Image (cartoon, rainbow, N blue to C red; front, side, top):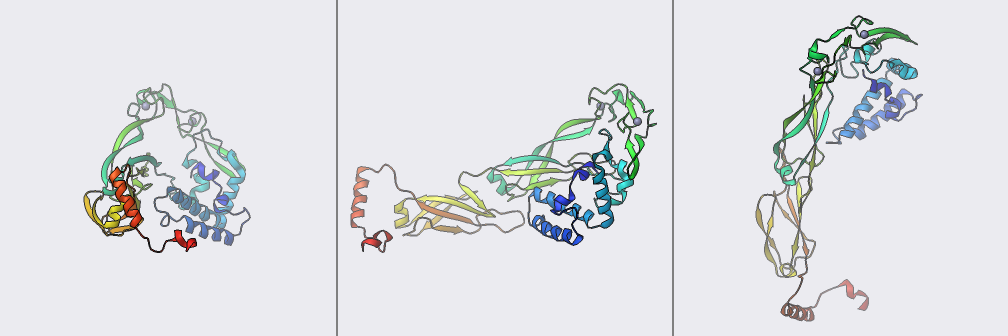
Length: 358
Ligand SMILES: [Zn+2]
Ligand SMILES: [Zn+2]
């Protein structure tokens, strides 16, 4: 159990009133679960979180007994948790032990470590080909100088004489009688005589590491890659958290992406469009030739099969080349003459510009 859950409003999460019927709750849960389902929102950590919250809220509120317990705890408010920062999972074992399975941890209340998040910016070309790189990782690790207990050399402490080393004192409040963290030792069971200088008695230090991450080919902007076990330390016996690497893909100067397809806009001289031409265009990796038929209008799109992005394990996309007419700049005197001659001889067919003069 953790304090956040008690500050969470399960009714609000599901958009129902506190008097809502179970049917009403189930109906809202179904609707919200559909909208936020991770399969329908790939790479959206917000939706994933909402989905988890919705599921959690529904599990409690659709169970009459659990809903009652939740309501009671809510009615008590923060006074239920007046311990000073030493609050931990085991303190609420009496009340919430039977809720443990719903929240995904065992009755012993061992929590998986916290997830860390980091951002990684890669180029468009790297996103297409995939790469292996290192990301920086700030990890909390136990201080080795004090072996994690926060006292100088790990020995300058004595057992708390208020709680006799258990870290807990008994407390009666309203409906409940439960153990509360000992205020004298903040639930630690021992009092530090002299602080460890390395960690300033925190017992943990921040270690800067790097971790190797393999980015698969075809990764898109906003994708989150999960590295299991590279997050914060879990409670004893529980797994460490994960490192979530959010990928930002820099835009390309020329290429745009649509799924696995690439889009490239290419200028044509109007002579190339009018007479036809074979032009050179780039793909992400090489130069290829593209045949432009005579009389190609501006805005026409040519499909080059298989020259899009090849996401790992999936079919290659295609390259779509969209041409547009780019008028020549700074015409020479003689070029201008030729064009004027062309203009005077040119007769267009049906032209909307002539429509009202006909
Ligand atoms: Zn104590
Ligand atoms: Zn230390």
